[in-house]
Amino acid sequence: MERLDSLLLHRIDLLADPDDVSAVFANLHASGKVAAFGLSNASPAQVRMLAARVRVPLLINQVEINLDRIDALIDGTLDQCLERRISPQAWCPIGGVGYTAWGRFASPAQWRLVETELDRQAKRHSTDRVGINLAWLLRHPAKIVPLLGSTKPERIRAALASTTIPYSRDDWYNLYEARRGQAMP
Image (cartoon, rainbow, N blue to C red; front, side, top):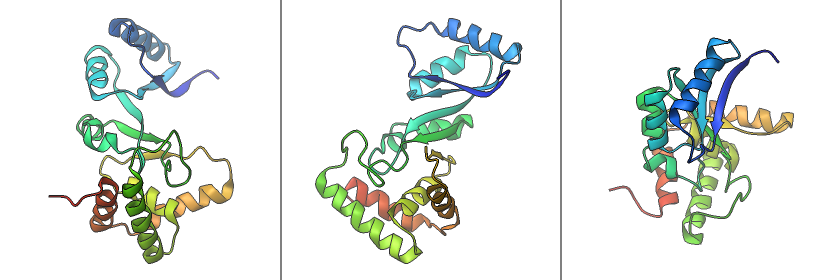
């Protein structure tokens, strides 16, 4: 391979010098080896720090976001993506729904509410829980890109079908409130 479309700095080394990272990115870009750069698992503070030093735009932030792990919705990550026009990529986008990933972040009571709301919406939209989960992610204005990690054509087709669900603001908030375990003020 002669050129990468994008290169993500994965799990930023806490001892990395941002000027060194900037120099490496600049050299890779100037040599034509990498077209675009991004980060993976970067906090809003890390994005700000690197964006202030790196001479090429940071275009991607790959973060864990799903119905079980909603931190990116409330810690400023997705707000920053909107502000800086960074494309958020969701790794483990169906965690909790399609499978239990690395433990459960929602309480059992919260998760029962999530499952009830997922089933209600799935029935109304003639799909399944995973389809609703993906429609929920896709509804966010940051234009979250779910990274499915599947090579099975039937799963890819099912995921693609979630893009046609007429997912409303009310649907989104009903599921978000179920996950939080409380209504929005």
